[in-house]
Amino acid sequence: NAGVTQTPKFQVLKTGQSMTLQCAQDMNHEYMSWYRQDPGMGLRLIHYSVGAGITDQGEVPNGYNVSRSTTEDFPLRLLSAAPSQTSVYFCASSYSAGGRELFFGEGSRLTVL
Amino acid sequence: GENVEQHPSTLSVQEGDSAVIKCTYSDSASNYFPWYKQELGKRPQLIIDIRSNVGEKKDQRIAVTLNKTAKHFSLHITETQPEDSAVYFCAGRSTDKLIFGTGTRLQVFP
Image 1 (tube, rainbow over the protein chains, first blue to last red):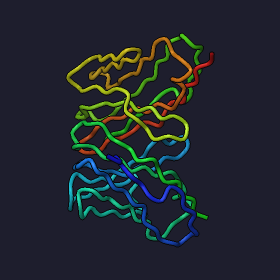
Image 2 (cartoon, rainbow over the protein chains, first blue to last red):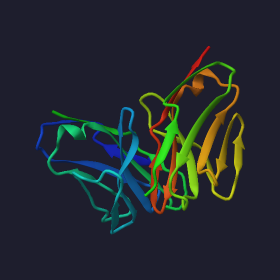
Image 3 (cartoon, chains in turn brown, green):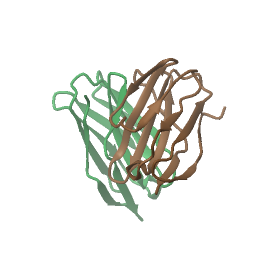
Image 4 (spheres, rainbow over the protein chains, first blue to last red):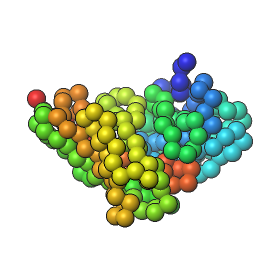
């Protein structure tokens, strides 16, 4: 049981490049989400999904796209990277949205030059 | 939507002392309030949570209290140990979103 797996762990991009952060969970969780963590800003919700085929915006969705075609996978896409998107990104999942423990991946550190 | 404020941003205590971290939330409909601990370079992990129909919950040296009227909740750590040193995040659940506070860096000195 791997839990929540994120790839890559580290990535350096140039401004304007695109990339996808991958997230997969093997716990059959319905709820998945993406957060970004910046110093002094805590964990800010980017996008979330309550089940396959359903996604919604969080606190800071601009510049990011998501899709949820399967229960297991929830990729985060940066269409045109900007230096302001330099951050540590965490994918997290839970059994449901209704007040259950969030299990986090190990994080992906992204640097945009 | 939900807004969660957390204080203090840093907290230093002597080993064996108690530590208290406070959070306030804005959405009166929020009904679930977890606390996460993040050690340096690691992922956040749940340490305790409380639901809106409960005023206090304890688990060994940690406890959480909730005041729904004032819309604030607190984390209490007693008999602190060096391994309690970490960043602690409170959170509140509004509809399907779990919104986090900005974190408290707790340092426990031997």
